[in-house]
Image (cartoon, rainbow, N blue to C red; front, top):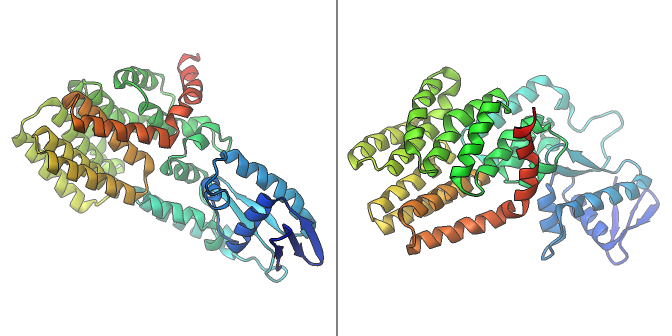
Length: 384
């Protein structure tokens, strides 16, 4: 089916029928029609259809709702919701009885695409994950709901994680808590995380990740590296098992960071550094490479090698930008900020990274979303 778009009168015609749209409805339809078959998130649509304006994501949903009602009269044209990701315009055009993507219901293809997505996840290729998620209609597969949620996490879409009803709260809980740990005093967040572990509210794999990895950083940034080192013993026991081998690089990098904060001597740090380098040669995960460069930069700052430290930190954040894992870039900024608070308080570098941390908080919407996030999470610890 071919649509005729009249931009001067905001009208769209097809099959001898014409409907009249509001200006932004027309702009939205025009963009989707030019890119029919592709999927766009709310954020992307806001950027393309409402440039230089500051509407909320609900604006997209409202316009989609009105457009759908108006387009019903044209027959067969629909704006599809790609669960967990965004919207795509479907325009009929294939011969009767012929599916555009006949492989959609092929279980082997579905399993293969899930494996590809998982590989991208392991290697820290967030942008690749995002591209794959956007091309579901064209490639003829449906993304697993869990990975749809992971895509939102990778983009740093905290608002969706808080308010969506597409995924049960229990399945979102780990990702929501990762954001919550970034806000406020690490000492307070350690106490909260200990209660979270005690209550066993997370799904078992995520409960394990919290216990063996996330808690290491929380203890360290709360000024309790000795507790992190004690917990590290169990971490290495767990990751020695076959299903946890991909946790090895992150755990080794975190161990290096713990010892850095604990004041361990350079000779021992050098030995750990060589171990991490060797591991990353075998497992070149972008997230871990970026995080490793940041920790090396902090190590240089501890040795008063200011230019080298800033250079390594900048390179690490660039790699994390390349990976497309938005929250993990922020996680490194969180590390940098609190490390500087502990060891470089009052310095120009501390002020520089405090400004970066504050800017990231605002960019994520964490300051704006802190209250609804707390209202969602804190009652869970009090419930029987």
